[in-house]
View 1 (spheres, rainbow, N blue to C red):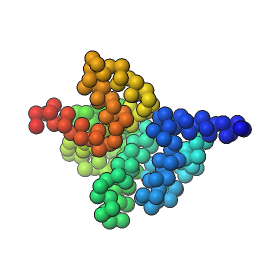
View 2 (view 1 turned 45 degrees about the vertical axis):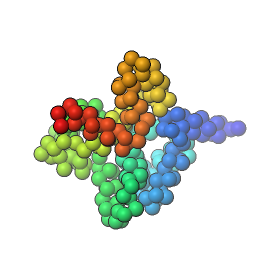
View 3 (view 1 turned 45 degrees about the horizontal axis):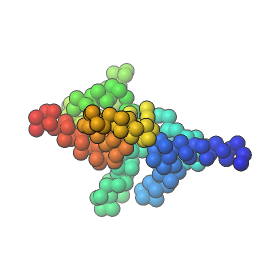
Amino acid sequence: MGVAAETVVRNRALQTEWYGEPLGERVRRLLDRLGLSQSGLAGVLGLSAPMLSQLMSAQRAKISNPAVLHRLLAVEELAADPGFEAMAAGEVKERLREIGAEPAATTAGLRAATSGRIPVGGASGEPVADGAARRAADGAPVPPEAAARLVQALLREVASAAEIEAAAALIGDRFPELADLLRVYGNGRTSEAAAHYARTAGNARGY
């Protein structure tokens, strides 16, 4: 086996550890489901088409930008929506446009999300150009799905699925609720994480 082939095998194994399966398989399902071209999906994710191709072919292993992972999770959630089949093409296009405009899952954004608010300004003080920020320009609560994706992207940036599960197992006996949080946000579906966030945030606010 040549060096290039060995690299691909190693990268596919790493992708399986980090993302649950090789990115090529994960992305191809989205392309089929959404009827997008590879370059079209790359535009939504905020990647160049060659970079997405390298990730899919396992020439590269890791999605290095948390914002890209954040958007990939959002696109997968859209494709898995039970009502997706009934969505008009224009609605799907608009949802994808909004996802493509979402900012990175920064720690500042995470702090704002867990407080029930989202920032409308970036580090420079200029407005953040994303659909969620425009909808919440008056300080409205963050939708549970958006908040859940922020936490998911942050966790998955710092640890693999196997590492998150191992950490949850270590603390499960003494801190079961914290272990459950790690599993839900680290390895669960966005819909499960969003339900957990809505339930927990609602309890915290007393409603």
